[in-house]
Length: 453
Image 1 (spheres, rainbow, N blue to C red):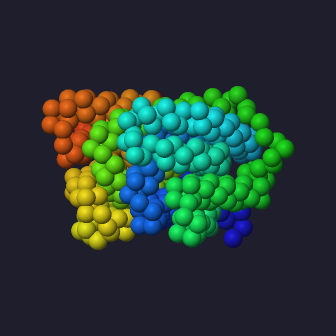
Image 2: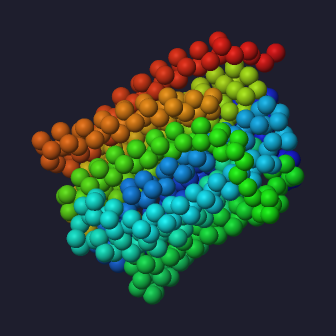
Image 3: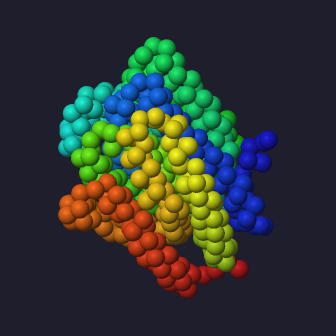
């Protein structure tokens, strides 16, 4: 396939088939990424110990917290380049490509340094169990050497997605994921390196995925082609990336902070609860990955059509991604719920761990598709350049509400089930508010701006 053929025309013609063709590889890439991450847990859970499994799992919320601010910026880069395409400003694309990779490198180094310095203090602040904290710190410090490469992969993938190419990021993720699983099995089972083995495997696989994306970009058509000699960050590109991406990143960071608090509450039930919670959480992530693919489709398709002032297509984009995202989420959640007792055996055979895992899957697994109500509407808002509104709604509706729940309801009734209930309740509240905000904002913007003739 030529480079020209890899660019999708989002401004003309049918939408459903293009959105599906865009979203499915992205969903597959995200699900594979999560499955490969789950392989870390499965390998240490089955071939090391529940303590090692808890050590890996106790880092999940913290890693998300430190990465989310900068990962949100990649969304800004997506909107930046997609807007250039929608407006027909082809001459601006190449400079923005180089700015995007430059931002990725700077962000990656910042997170790496922060991670190395703050790993143990943050785990201590989270009340990581005493029998877990040493292994958790070791895993986390090794893991952070992967961060610069994670940034390159995600920002580079954002460049490719901005023009409709979600297939090659999937190729990169598949190849690197196979390496990750192979190294997990080799280092943990053969060399008995437990958490060190899965951490090293994670670093190696992310280096490979970043190198593959860089290869794709350095062999792109001229306007998208990356030359490492031309790397620099333009002020106007940084400004646009921050305007859209920073609120998304801050939202993700505050969201992750609330999850860190919840993780601390989970930690209070002991390492067995941590292991069970982590195992069950992987299935939530699979559903999120699928829905997030339609969120990214909503962002990209909305960005191009909004920049081109094709407002009717923007409305159609929302209807399609919302319907497909929620529909697919229901199918995935129902399937996981029905087979939960069998699926959890992939991670552990410890009856105590299984009990905690099944409790979470019962309360949060079945209604998990509800996250699509606010994620998809918020994504389409960001595609129209409105990133502050979804940030505020998400921070209040999910983050603040969850913190209040933990410090009031859970404190009064300290059970694991009570803690898990905070998720579906917050999803319902946030979804109702976000959909309303999207419809009101869209109506106002379309009335104020001239439509394409």
